Length: 403
Image (cartoon, rainbow, N blue to C red):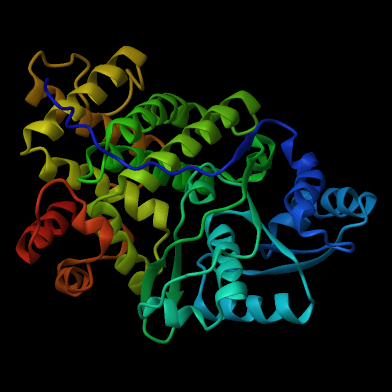
């Protein structure tokens, strides 16, 4: 009897998805805390500086929690990127206020900050210690994550990407699974056009990278493909119709699926590049990921297995009739797989061009003189899981092609 060669591990937290789910936050908090038997629970809410107040959700969440006699502390200090000082300070305030559970509400920066704070509360130390190799041995304090973008997938991954401002590095810490990912598509209606484009571009990049990653497996591929189906078709549409809740729902579901995929199947060279570029030049993570994806796809297309999957993307996008009257991608799809793989790259360029993601590094102020400096700091798990091996010269060529 032939033994199966299929082997994988797969992790996923509990998920609650749907319009209006944010109204269940208080009840979900009490359910999580019930086994601990805390009489007067206090929630530490981690968010960005503007979302809760400008969206009006601060009052609705406040009323929801007060009805259930749940006290709370709002920590709305998260900037565009999560930093070591924000996380360490958040941990200190959590302990000072004697909170029992954390809720992250916002984009990936707020969610990553909430995760890291939850880990520090039970494990001690500073986030710099974990950048240096210390591991989260104990389970984090209970926490719930509520994304307000359809982008990062952070709500279903176990890592948090934190910037050390002093060292000028952006690095992941791992082992931080949420108790609940609470996803309400209505929370994304407040995203402006540029952030909708950039966060959604990140989601599509993650889905495509996880599909071809060295770490991909049978189940992660299923999630990646379903994510690509939703994101590719709906991204140009939602860009033109920001208040369409059905499109927002499709985008949030696509982002969720890509998060599940890359949390188990890993990413690739695009995200290897994105971390140092984001830190060094202050470029939006989603923007740089969208810009670089076509050039990394071209590099990876030398592998037969990658060609097979990119050809699948081409067939899908052609069948979905995405942007048939826009851009430079040929209207007719080739018949051979290598031709289809190349066609998929051109279609990706059209999708990102349509949502105003630049296609060249020079458009965002990065020139040839910057390339070696970027290559020097391009490393990490994402780069290691790129399907095609890379060396410094390969990375340099990819960036030069993207200029």
